[in-house]
Length: 314
Ligand SMILES: Cc1cc2nc3c(=O)[nH]c(=O)nc-3n(C[C@H](O)[C@H](O)[C@H](O)COP(=O)(O)OP(=O)(O)OC[C@H]3O[C@@H](n4cnc5c(N)ncnc54)[C@H](O)[C@@H]3O)c2cc1C
Image 1 (cartoon, helix red, strand yellow):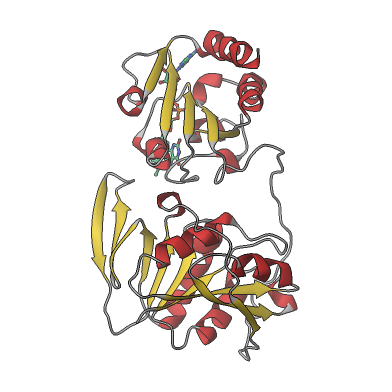
Image 2 (cartoon, rainbow, N blue to C red):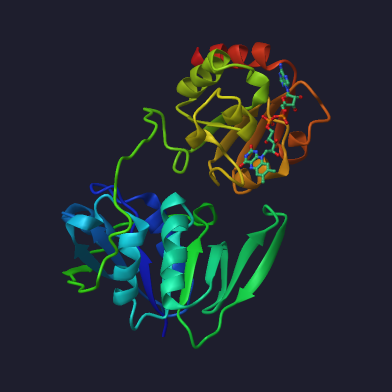
């Protein structure tokens, strides 16, 4: 039987939805016994949220002042100590998981499997390569624990309604002193988070300035959508880096994605492969974005976007 440890991502108060998606992936493994570990300081509320997730048999909390804010170098040795007896250790393919899980894998002496998008067996997984242009099936040795990240855009969060047991574990391991928390710099926005937003509207290089992005924000607010961008728009300084969608940005799966003035480079498109309906607005009818768009509007974005905002706002 597979015994799977899922590492909870949280901010000390709320469980990140990526955790419920990791559980969904773990639940695809036959007769899996799924536990969640919540590392932090004062994480009772987060553990209670984790205990509600269906398919989870137990939530383990590891309380330590040094676990908040989370630093991969500090969390990894504790996870390795706790992982003894588990056949799989899963974390999300978010910035948190991509930072943490390679350390866990290295300390356990195994190769990490990255970006699981589907489960073909307890030790066999599908994952994207070449910016999502090819899918490979990877087999992990059955006599070693599997350490993996889960491509959260490929999974729907499991339901709530469960009441798994919550237990505190005390772990005695030496924690490294070479890495310490200094400061967290993060963009703040009242708009929906890209990872969970049902609708996302992204702007590209064609917006041509930070000020012009205002028309994207207006449309987003009218739709109740999150705001994304292409890397070109980020590199030009029109929008902050956390808005970037794509291979080196965020991989997202909203129900509706509107790409405004974005050409559709493969590195961008790989970030929206799992989106529901894709709408593209571009003045070049040959733009590659139209190859994947469900709805294409050919024309000047500076005319189309304000018109759309007015029409939807009425
Ligand atoms: C290793 C690597 C990783 C990368 N990772 C990412 C990533 O994560 N995300 C990402 O986005 N990119 C990424 N890129 C960059 C990517 O290759 C493209 O350069 C980038 O996506 C282009 O951004 P863009 O579509 O905004 O700009 P452009 O390619 O310049 O396209 C602008 C589009 O706007 C249209 N346009 C211009 N004016 C108007 C107008 N007035 N009205 C309507 N349409 C108009 C044009 O026709 C054009 O199609 C990566 C590249 C590399 C090499």
